[in-house]
Image (cartoon, rainbow, N blue to C red; front, side):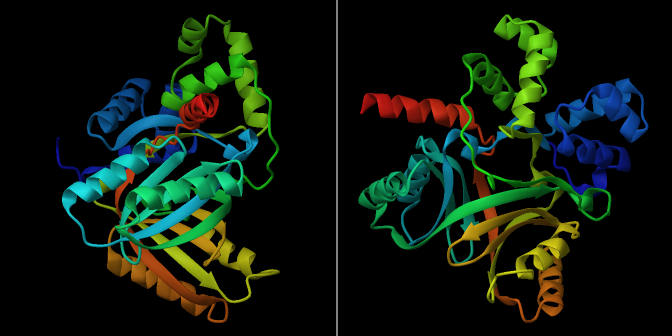
Length: 339
């Protein structure tokens, strides 16, 4: 595959990535208007970004809390082991029906695993099974609950401050009873959120008006958070970091003030609010570790009485980046029925 770096992405390419990340279903006509190009050029450039692997696909981010699920975050350290044992460990994690997303890391932890569970007992059962199978290579772990998430635009694409795409999903859990039609449409959009209304109509045998109404209702109820592209930032020579923030007495206006600062940083693409050893988790996409350190120094200088400490981890490999919740729900249901 062709080697890509950020210098080879001209301003039009960066505008396309910036527009598509806000709404992966943006029509080509609107994409052309935002990038000030013709429809033909906009469509061609989008296809080239896909062909080069910069855009890995288009997916539908759903709120797990609307299905009665909580996202548990498990961080683990692994002892030095054979490549085969490590491969078996991550293969187990990737294929497990409760694992929504995971990543391999370099830093204080070697892996982070997002686990879907309806109750603490369900998560504990997963953790116990992991320990039974791979306890000999797991040397340390930390468990947190993800309270809520918010996603920001990649301001670095156009050298502008980031903007909020969606805030605090999973913050107001309320289980939604979805129809079979809704689940069918969500299943299709989860795999390809750019699938047009005509394509959805053909696959579901339903008229376009009905499909539009269902999607609007799913968005209004918060089941659909937003339609997102998966962008492989390593293809433009950026690195993906997790920053774990430990705060002093994180109450009152403390967290909002830190969050407000983070929202304005062009390289912070997500903030996760946690209950556990640390209170905030930042997702940072940046071109060098040096620039990351500069940004974090500014953060500590800006909030010297709030930031107690932080840990930095480099994400070396990301798994299940599609975040296909419908597939996980179907697999969880199958396992429950089997037992």
